[in-house]
Figure (cartoon, rainbow, N blue to C red):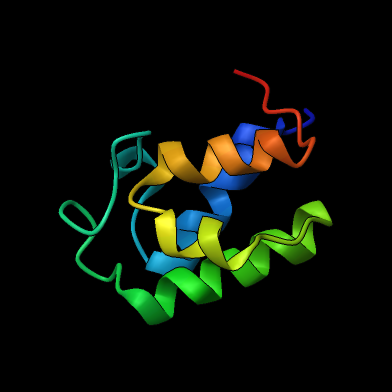
Length: 83
């Protein structure tokens, strides 16, 4: 079974923030994920850059408030998310 891009994204988020994939949705952010802070967000974005071969701008990085924002920026960089 091939995992789609959204599943891969959620899997990475789950590992970085140490939360279950079932606890993650587009609205997840610092309010709902206890381990989400500026450092873990940078770790996550770095991992996503490596995984999806993209480079986030400083303004994108500072604008991320939740998973929806991350998905939007990945799409802006040409990453196709299978939803």
